[in-house]
Image (cartoon, rainbow, N blue to C red; front, side, top):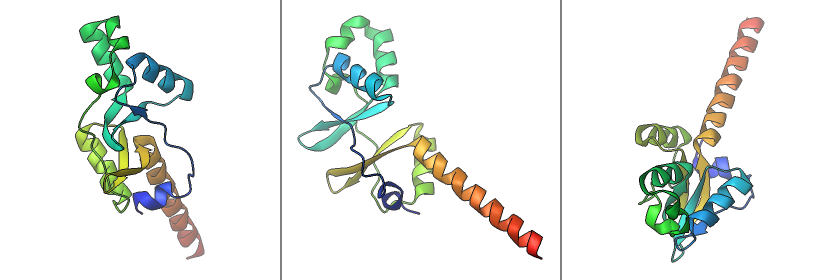
Length: 142
């Protein structure tokens, strides 16, 4: 299955912020929406990812003054991205190797979706459960 098929039924908005957004504002967005990361946009393109980890690392390194700095200065950049035609298991492998939890889905330079490792693991578990059920049915009918 491809990432495109995984995200096609969502219809939901992808929450993101601009590089000029303050860390304080971005943290409020993360908390109020109960999400772990935001794609950071600059000139209509994904410039990076701002995540909970960025907040923690920067607070430890620079203290609370970081809250008034722009996200563009503290985000993880460049963002690792995938194309819609990327296989879900390939994307899961990429996330595991790179130790990241979020991937913007891009076509050309436009972001068309955003997936988390939770989305991909959920798909994988559902697929394994479906295969196990098919095996149980096959064994019982033999």
